[in-house]
Image (cartoon, rainbow, N blue to C red):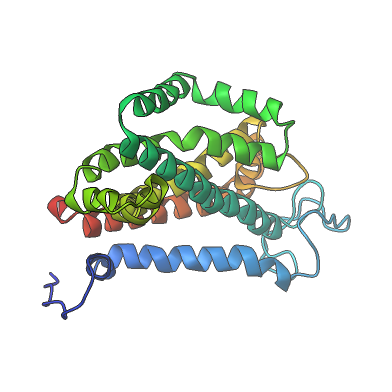
Length: 290
């Protein structure tokens, strides 16, 4: 059992929170595993003399024999399975982290403005959020994908558009409380404009909540992309993502289980690590939950 030592003078609250997070061994182990998988996905393909879309007609449906260059064998088109899984990880991880960042920024700014403005503006802004909440998620994503013309950009935009709502609601509630605090009223009395107050006082004081929820948003975006690609709505062949690779693996699981296991295990490991990291951040940033 770890014992918190007395923090040195001048240590900020954010530094103390990250110090508590570093004491969580499971969370730190998850960070290390996640970093290793990210490095493998983005650097690993450069170790091979081909890409995931290159077909080797001399090696069609080769099983995993751990021999160079096809360590985990090839698929029915002679494409290297390991390279395709790593390149698919690049797509899924990029959409996951970048999508969570964009959705988080939109939601935080929207919720901060609504909570600080209050009154009729707040009511109108939150009615829009409630209307969007009323649409079934998958149907909304399909409609947005069709509206944007399909493709990776359309998928990214559709996921971001549907996942900024919850951060907006969470930050709006906190912004309403912060708007009544003395330092905000002093800034307003000193002539500071509304946008400046939101950016310099409201948003920074919501950072703990933003960081914790952002860690939960990343696996949600990755899972959304994988689920939509599995359904055939998201990333499409010949480009790989973990979602469409798992879909291909399920159709061949009776004859070649490795097509399902390799992308499935990596996706499950990433989601598990992200959930442990989110739990560690929640415990570190909210000591009352400890």
